[in-house]
Amino acid sequence: MNGSAAKAIFWFSIAAQVAGAQVFFWDALPDYRELTEGAVVVGTPKDFAFAVFGLAVMQSAYWYARRLQPQVRFRHRVVLGHVLLCVSEVSFFFVSALATVAMFDHWRRSQFVLWKLMLLVSAIFAFFCYKRQLASVGDALLEAQREGIGKATTQPTGRGKP
Image 1 (cartoon, rainbow, N blue to C red):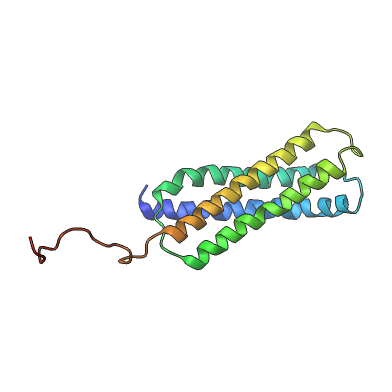
Image 2 (cartoon, rainbow, N blue to C red):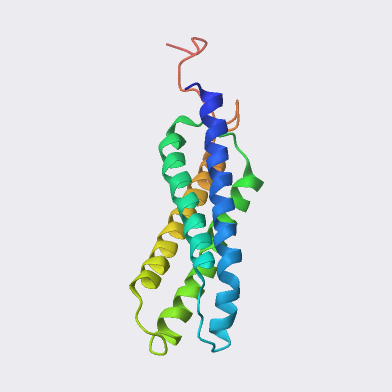
């Protein structure tokens, strides 16, 4: 695979992670609202399917992009790097809040259901990977050298005294 194809697939994988996160977010947001209001949440099979789909998209795109990232060369992009770092930090807030409310506020009220716990743990892991991916790309964009700048040479030019 050439560099431009790897770069295109890499950015498509990042976009797929964003899409998967949005699917999970919009599916879980009503449940989060009900949990914070003190209601007992009864998820439907459709809700479960959407959540699992979003997490599966996030994870498959993450592991593929993680493998491609060393092949991709980034240009120095300060604003985009900072935006990705900000989004990476903010992306973990919702799933952390959801897990906190579900585990600490509602655990005793609801019956222990293994699949709900597994879904919650899977969501935390998927969003951790997503956060890590965005942060690594943001860092790479900030650390990339601009063309021609910062390439100081230490080679003798031959014009100095011997």
